[in-house]
Image 1 (cartoon, rainbow, N blue to C red):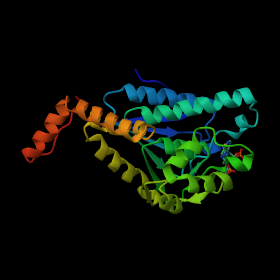
Image 2: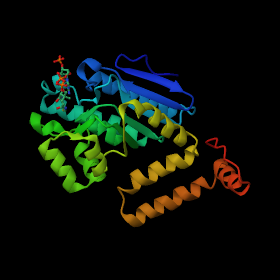
Image 3: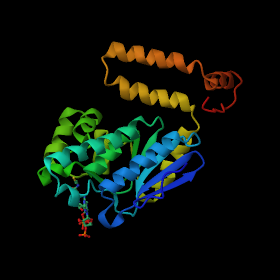
Image 4: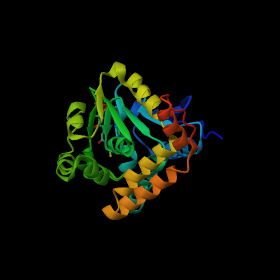
Length: 263
Ligand code: COA
């Protein structure tokens, strides 16, 4: 069953690749409660859909990926609702990180606050050269609440993260690339073609191995090293039970391209 239709998201499927477009261009795709909830449902739906192997996440319009949480809602929050709101956002972004399929953020413009946090929850980030990224919450007298303080520090290191978090600066895509905050920077006209090309490459890989690499990296980094190695070894053993391992090794020895089935 397909979740939706959605008011603030567009979901498009093309073979094994699904594209979610956050669609509130009038507010630069700011994430309000409803949009977060729609994102949660869309991600769960795609996670459970065996025909989908890769997800692309982008924003509608030419200006913005996501310009943050909706400041109209933030302005009204209480201590109780603010905590609940942060936990909801964290949960939705965790779902993106743990859905078991690569999610590529196609950053078509501003990725600020919750938008930068959303991009960081994705597996790989490709940004247009005109994009600006940052965590400007400090300028509103608040702090990031969708795990930005945690993912940014893990992605670019503590020192660089603290500078970005404390200045609230919007940095250009090239600078974000230098820091390791985005994987690639491309001209705007090439963003979707480049993203789809990468998505097709990832969609052709063995899905169970892809899932386990995601798990090994994300979960392993939160464990002590010996425990993480043990976890990796267990997943390494598990892939030995797959048809795809037999197909991949056989195809190599027969000097042909492997056809992976996700079994
Ligand atoms: N929440 C709610 N509305 C937002 C928004 C947000 N995070 N970001 C932008 N908007 C709205 C603006 O209020 C404006 O609405 P209006 O047309 O009714 O006035 C519209 O989107 C266009 O934004 P505008 O500020 O006019 O565009 P700009 O090109 O001058 O500036 C930004 C673009 C992204 C630099 C600026 O909108 C901005 O700083 N946004 C907030 C970023 C932020 O602090 N995010 C973290 C939130 S926790």
